[in-house]
Length: 243
Image (cartoon, rainbow, N blue to C red):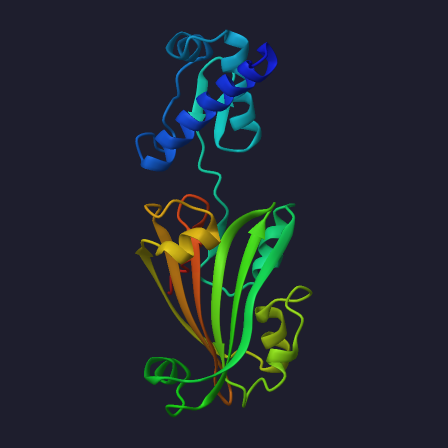
Protein backbone atom coordinates (compact mmCIF):
# COMPACT_ATOMS: atom_id res chain seq x y z
CA UNK A 1 0.00 0.00 0.00
CA UNK A 2 1.34 3.46 -0.92
CA UNK A 3 2.32 5.58 2.11
CA UNK A 4 1.43 9.26 2.42
CA UNK A 5 4.91 10.48 1.48
CA UNK A 6 5.05 8.60 -1.84
CA UNK A 7 1.45 9.58 -2.55
CA UNK A 8 2.30 13.28 -2.18
CA UNK A 9 5.35 12.78 -4.39
CA UNK A 10 3.27 11.11 -7.07
CA UNK A 11 0.76 13.97 -7.03
CA UNK A 12 3.32 16.77 -7.41
CA UNK A 13 5.05 14.82 -10.19
CA UNK A 14 1.67 14.49 -11.89
CA UNK A 15 1.20 18.26 -11.80
CA UNK A 16 4.70 18.83 -13.22
CA UNK A 17 4.07 16.32 -15.99
CA UNK A 18 0.74 17.90 -16.89
CA UNK A 19 2.29 21.37 -17.13
CA UNK A 20 5.24 20.08 -19.17
CA UNK A 21 2.85 18.30 -21.55
CA UNK A 22 0.97 21.57 -22.10
CA UNK A 23 4.22 23.43 -22.81
CA UNK A 24 5.69 20.79 -25.12
CA UNK A 25 2.43 20.41 -27.05
CA UNK A 26 2.25 24.16 -27.62
CA UNK A 27 -0.91 24.54 -25.55
CA UNK A 28 1.11 26.95 -23.40
CA UNK A 29 3.79 29.16 -24.96
CA UNK A 30 6.65 31.25 -23.53
CA UNK A 31 5.13 34.20 -21.66
CA UNK A 32 1.83 32.47 -20.88
CA UNK A 33 0.70 32.62 -17.26
CA UNK A 34 0.18 29.29 -15.53
CA UNK A 35 -2.48 28.51 -12.96
CA UNK A 36 -1.85 29.72 -9.42
CA UNK A 37 -1.02 27.38 -6.53
CA UNK A 38 -4.61 27.59 -5.32
CA UNK A 39 -6.01 26.87 -8.79
CA UNK A 40 -3.68 23.90 -9.30
CA UNK A 41 -4.48 22.56 -5.83
CA UNK A 42 -8.19 22.70 -6.62
CA UNK A 43 -7.80 21.29 -10.13
CA UNK A 44 -5.69 18.30 -9.00
CA UNK A 45 -7.40 17.85 -5.62
CA UNK A 46 -4.15 18.28 -3.69
CA UNK A 47 -2.86 20.58 -0.98
CA UNK A 48 -1.49 23.99 -1.78
CA UNK A 49 1.90 22.78 -0.53
CA UNK A 50 1.94 20.00 -3.14
CA UNK A 51 1.03 22.45 -5.91
CA UNK A 52 3.68 24.89 -4.69
CA UNK A 53 6.35 22.16 -4.83
CA UNK A 54 5.48 21.37 -8.45
CA UNK A 55 5.72 25.03 -9.47
CA UNK A 56 8.90 25.64 -7.46
CA UNK A 57 10.72 22.71 -9.07
CA UNK A 58 9.73 23.90 -12.57
CA UNK A 59 11.00 27.39 -11.70
CA UNK A 60 14.27 25.93 -10.39
CA UNK A 61 14.63 23.92 -13.63
CA UNK A 62 14.16 27.09 -15.70
CA UNK A 63 10.90 25.92 -17.28
CA UNK A 64 8.81 28.53 -15.48
CA UNK A 65 9.65 32.04 -14.26
CA UNK A 66 8.03 33.61 -11.20
CA UNK A 67 7.34 37.34 -10.86
CA UNK A 68 6.54 38.46 -7.32
CA UNK A 69 3.02 39.78 -7.00
CA UNK A 70 2.18 38.99 -10.63
CA UNK A 71 2.33 35.22 -11.05
CA UNK A 72 4.23 32.37 -12.67
CA UNK A 73 4.86 32.26 -16.40
CA UNK A 74 6.25 29.89 -19.01
CA UNK A 75 9.90 30.71 -19.56
CA UNK A 76 11.90 30.25 -22.74
CA UNK A 77 15.10 29.02 -21.18
CA UNK A 78 16.21 26.68 -23.94
CA UNK A 79 19.90 27.15 -24.68
CA UNK A 80 20.54 29.08 -27.88
CA UNK A 81 23.29 28.43 -30.41
CA UNK A 82 24.49 31.15 -32.74
CA UNK A 83 23.93 30.60 -36.44
CA UNK A 84 26.43 33.38 -37.16
CA UNK A 85 29.51 31.63 -35.79
CA UNK A 86 30.80 28.09 -35.37
CA UNK A 87 31.45 27.14 -31.76
CA UNK A 88 32.14 23.79 -30.18
CA UNK A 89 29.10 22.43 -28.35
CA UNK A 90 31.12 21.78 -25.15
CA UNK A 91 32.20 25.44 -25.04
CA UNK A 92 28.58 26.58 -25.40
CA UNK A 93 27.49 24.38 -22.51
CA UNK A 94 30.33 25.15 -20.09
CA UNK A 95 29.98 28.89 -20.81
CA UNK A 96 26.42 28.60 -19.49
CA UNK A 97 27.85 27.15 -16.29
CA UNK A 98 26.45 23.69 -17.06
CA UNK A 99 28.03 20.25 -17.23
CA UNK A 100 29.01 18.84 -20.62
CA UNK A 101 29.17 15.12 -21.38
CA UNK A 102 28.75 12.93 -24.45
CA UNK A 103 28.16 9.42 -25.74
CA UNK A 104 30.18 8.22 -28.71
CA UNK A 105 27.87 5.98 -30.73
CA UNK A 106 30.20 5.13 -33.61
CA UNK A 107 33.58 5.99 -35.14
CA UNK A 108 34.29 4.29 -38.45
CA UNK A 109 35.75 4.40 -41.95
CA UNK A 110 33.27 4.10 -44.82
CA UNK A 111 33.18 4.04 -48.59
CA UNK A 112 31.10 6.98 -49.74
CA UNK A 113 27.88 6.37 -51.62
CA UNK A 114 26.54 8.97 -54.04
CA UNK A 115 25.06 11.52 -51.60
CA UNK A 116 27.94 11.57 -49.09
CA UNK A 117 30.32 11.94 -52.04
CA UNK A 118 28.46 15.09 -53.10
CA UNK A 119 28.55 16.45 -49.54
CA UNK A 120 32.32 16.00 -49.30
CA UNK A 121 33.08 16.84 -52.93
CA UNK A 122 34.83 13.51 -53.56
CA UNK A 123 34.37 10.63 -55.99
CA UNK A 124 31.88 7.85 -55.25
CA UNK A 125 33.45 5.01 -53.23
CA UNK A 126 36.08 7.30 -51.75
CA UNK A 127 37.28 6.67 -48.20
CA UNK A 128 35.67 8.88 -45.55
CA UNK A 129 35.54 8.97 -41.77
CA UNK A 130 32.18 8.96 -40.03
CA UNK A 131 31.31 9.72 -36.41
CA UNK A 132 28.03 9.71 -34.53
CA UNK A 133 28.03 11.39 -31.13
CA UNK A 134 25.35 12.54 -28.67
CA UNK A 135 26.15 15.74 -26.77
CA UNK A 136 24.51 16.32 -23.39
CA UNK A 137 23.93 19.28 -21.11
CA UNK A 138 23.51 18.36 -17.46
CA UNK A 139 22.85 14.79 -18.57
CA UNK A 140 20.13 15.77 -21.06
CA UNK A 141 20.71 15.10 -24.78
CA UNK A 142 20.63 18.37 -26.74
CA UNK A 143 22.45 17.41 -29.94
CA UNK A 144 22.96 14.34 -32.09
CA UNK A 145 25.99 14.96 -34.32
CA UNK A 146 26.43 12.87 -37.47
CA UNK A 147 29.65 13.91 -39.22
CA UNK A 148 31.54 12.92 -42.37
CA UNK A 149 35.20 13.93 -42.59
CA UNK A 150 37.58 14.02 -45.55
CA UNK A 151 40.61 11.90 -44.51
CA UNK A 152 42.88 13.73 -46.95
CA UNK A 153 42.50 16.88 -44.84
CA UNK A 154 42.26 15.25 -41.39
CA UNK A 155 44.04 11.89 -41.68
CA UNK A 156 44.16 11.17 -37.92
CA UNK A 157 40.56 12.14 -37.21
CA UNK A 158 39.37 8.57 -36.64
CA UNK A 159 42.11 7.98 -34.04
CA UNK A 160 40.89 10.72 -31.70
CA UNK A 161 39.27 10.04 -28.34
CA UNK A 162 36.01 11.94 -28.70
CA UNK A 163 35.20 11.50 -25.03
CA UNK A 164 38.09 13.93 -24.42
CA UNK A 165 37.68 16.35 -27.33
CA UNK A 166 35.04 17.34 -29.86
CA UNK A 167 35.18 17.08 -33.63
CA UNK A 168 34.97 20.85 -33.83
CA UNK A 169 37.97 21.39 -31.56
CA UNK A 170 40.08 18.81 -33.34
CA UNK A 171 39.26 19.89 -36.90
CA UNK A 172 39.85 23.55 -36.04
CA UNK A 173 43.40 22.62 -35.04
CA UNK A 174 44.37 20.41 -37.99
CA UNK A 175 42.47 22.07 -40.84
CA UNK A 176 41.85 25.75 -40.12
CA UNK A 177 38.34 26.62 -41.25
CA UNK A 178 37.99 29.34 -43.87
CA UNK A 179 34.34 28.98 -44.96
CA UNK A 180 31.10 27.28 -43.95
CA UNK A 181 27.71 26.66 -45.51
CA UNK A 182 24.77 25.82 -43.29
CA UNK A 183 21.02 25.51 -43.36
CA UNK A 184 18.35 24.93 -40.71
CA UNK A 185 15.08 23.04 -41.07
CA UNK A 186 12.41 21.53 -38.85
CA UNK A 187 12.00 17.76 -38.95
CA UNK A 188 10.32 14.96 -37.06
CA UNK A 189 12.67 12.30 -35.68
CA UNK A 190 12.51 8.68 -36.76
CA UNK A 191 12.27 5.93 -34.13
CA UNK A 192 16.04 5.55 -33.77
CA UNK A 193 16.69 9.28 -33.39
CA UNK A 194 13.86 9.66 -30.86
CA UNK A 195 15.37 6.82 -28.83
CA UNK A 196 18.88 8.30 -28.97
CA UNK A 197 17.70 11.78 -27.93
CA UNK A 198 15.19 10.35 -25.43
CA UNK A 199 12.25 12.30 -26.87
CA UNK A 200 8.76 11.38 -28.12
CA UNK A 201 8.66 10.53 -31.80
CA UNK A 202 6.19 13.41 -32.27
CA UNK A 203 8.67 15.98 -30.86
CA UNK A 204 9.87 18.33 -33.64
CA UNK A 205 13.63 18.72 -34.00
CA UNK A 206 15.91 21.35 -35.48
CA UNK A 207 18.28 19.97 -38.10
CA UNK A 208 21.36 22.05 -38.83
CA UNK A 209 23.34 20.91 -41.89
CA UNK A 210 26.84 22.36 -42.04
CA UNK A 211 29.69 21.94 -44.52
CA UNK A 212 33.05 23.38 -43.52
CA UNK A 213 36.02 24.26 -45.72
CA UNK A 214 39.73 24.89 -45.26
CA UNK A 215 41.96 26.53 -47.86
CA UNK A 216 42.53 23.04 -49.33
CA UNK A 217 38.90 21.98 -49.76
CA UNK A 218 35.86 20.55 -47.95
CA UNK A 219 36.87 19.29 -44.50
CA UNK A 220 33.60 17.90 -43.15
CA UNK A 221 29.86 17.71 -43.55
CA UNK A 222 27.82 17.53 -40.34
CA UNK A 223 24.15 17.03 -39.60
CA UNK A 224 23.28 18.31 -36.13
CA UNK A 225 19.89 17.35 -34.66
CA UNK A 226 18.46 19.21 -31.66
CA UNK A 227 15.19 18.52 -29.81
CA UNK A 228 13.12 21.62 -30.53
CA UNK A 229 11.90 21.88 -26.94
CA UNK A 230 15.47 21.96 -25.60
CA UNK A 231 17.35 24.18 -28.04
CA UNK A 232 17.19 27.40 -30.02
CA UNK A 233 19.30 28.81 -32.82
CA UNK A 234 19.72 32.54 -33.30
CA UNK A 235 22.13 35.44 -33.33
CA UNK A 236 22.64 39.19 -33.22
CA UNK A 237 23.61 41.44 -36.11
CA UNK A 238 24.90 45.00 -35.92
CA UNK A 239 24.20 47.16 -38.96
CA UNK A 240 26.41 50.18 -39.39
CA UNK A 241 25.08 52.83 -41.74
CA UNK A 242 27.45 53.99 -44.46
CA UNK A 243 27.96 57.65 -45.24
